[in-house]
Image (cartoon, rainbow, N blue to C red; front, side, top):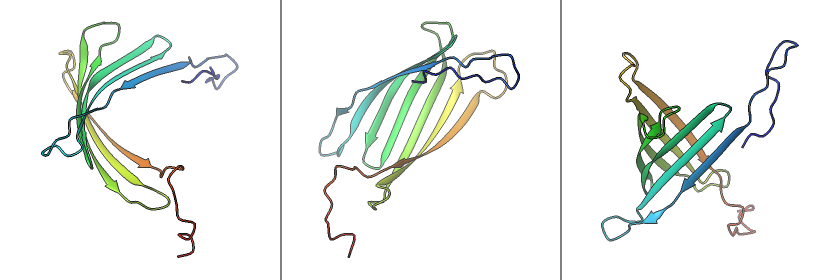
Length: 147
């Protein structure tokens, strides 16, 4: 949620940046058994709005300890049920268990444009690095800082 509308102009004429609103909903359902240790399926819904631009993404994510994969659809602008992109995501978690970082996640995603009017460059790539900080509510030993 970005409520302020700052002036983005370099000159005397005012040019306001529209407020941005984001709604994210995700449900995590455990599908664990003896083969799928601690596995979860997560349906995901994301809606963003800023000025005339509206973005809608929905899909599903499969998560297990240390690994996640997902597939998502992005809605075409100004069209309710026409999807313009297919997104694939894969990620790895590396546990650190240190005082400063509990884990680091590397995600890679590929966006395939589904509309036929894009002759070249119908694939885009994104790499993200996510730092998970330790919980401030975790019990810590008072002697740990000395030994």
